[in-house]
Image (cartoon, rainbow, N blue to C red; front, side):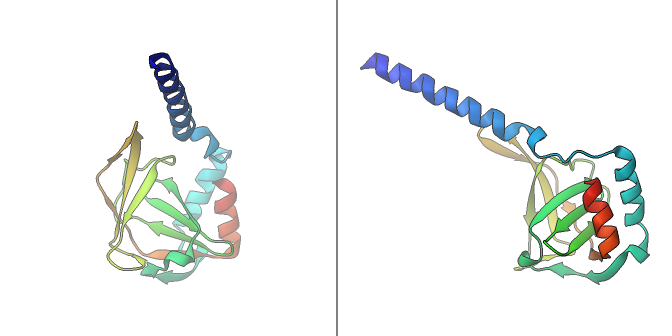
Length: 151
């Protein structure tokens, strides 16, 4: 009986180690891209003519995914719309591969809500200091294509 218990403990430890290794590997999350394309796309983000609309809030249904572009820009993507949020201040703790935790004050994600990057440390999450969201700007279709291709 003790031998079976030891064997199941070893199996459990091996499965936990494999799951941890897969979950912590950022390689499967990154999109390959050239740094020059990324820089060109970020330069476009500062040009107000690249945007077609501005909103204070986004519905939870308005986006399917969120990506960190850099320490001050987040990209919210849906099937046919791309929104950029320029954080109120630089957020150097943001990393492209971190999980983000949003703290919302309503049923929508709004300007002045916060985002905190979180690192998984074994079986718990370590949350970094929050960063404050700015307004949401909808990218024009051509600009949206450039940015999503770069990221």
